[in-house]
Image (cartoon, rainbow, N blue to C red):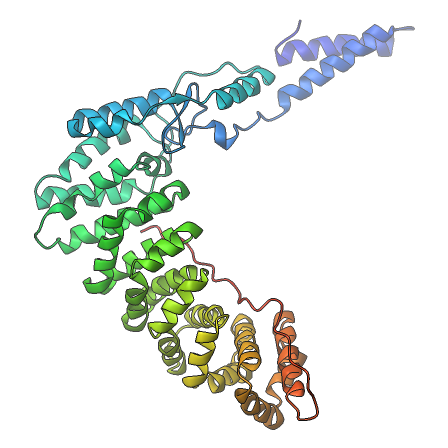
Length: 452
């Protein structure tokens, strides 16, 4: 049977010639020609990509012997066993912990990989360690070992190790290696000293934590480490603005996981994030705002954030007109999220929020900002009858809300119509009660994951 492209082409040529030039040909000849043409087509078809869940997180290669750790993560046995053995050699005291890291064969996944390979005529390859820079290489493994060891030595050696770990933690497969409590505790060893932490070392450790947190499977593990969260909160309290900003970014990254919102909210971090929002430079304000926005997707954290004075701080920043448009957008989005709770509506009313929001609807040229301003005004109209009169006076004098109905985006128009409905209902002749907007949620904040 022809296997190579040249053989297939020659075979097809002979079959076609016999069909075209011959006075008669059989169905068998036509079938053979079709099969040869199909085989040529298969040769030109791109190879099937390896499904992501068939790849080892450490090497990026197809797994030959997948095993499950107690954490629920699956790795290729040769790689993870070697890694665990090396950690045990460097840290003999870890023996008890690592003995619990039983490598249970992932029989189901092994069967799926075997079937996938069989369907494609692929022989399972031997493990390959030296791959492109985004995957784990032997050089990475050998480099990590002494760096982890240095974290227990002098401050100068800790600084050198933390600086390099900060960079290595940008590699996805290296992040996967820190998916155990033991590895996180090794990273935090510089915190064991009673002496104040060197500021440079502090920054690099926080940045390493931030980079590790970008891997979803690490987020919960990091947030559940009380020592780590206490370290980030201490850094928010008293570090330099840059240090506080990186700590806020790390908390923001971890807060993207729903189960972490409550953990971080109860930790006391919100107070210091609000402080950073008030005191920080624009970059620090973005990081603090991003963390608060994600945390406030859990309703109980809205109450905590408002009680720390976030509403009046945000209004103060916005009224001063010293912010760039994207930061204004982020902060108004934050106000819209907070305003879904009555405690924030009350704070907005008490601190002059209505007048400011009406100014936004009249003057802002940023559609998303106007949309969120309309969201907040509608919530105020619904929850605070007294403020409807102030909004009605503005409407009669300047037709502010009507102009949004006529010229705003689809979302802004819908919110503005709801506000006008509230104002009409408020007339003495009407006895109806307004219904809240069925979808009062603000536009979501993009919350990009920094990778310092």
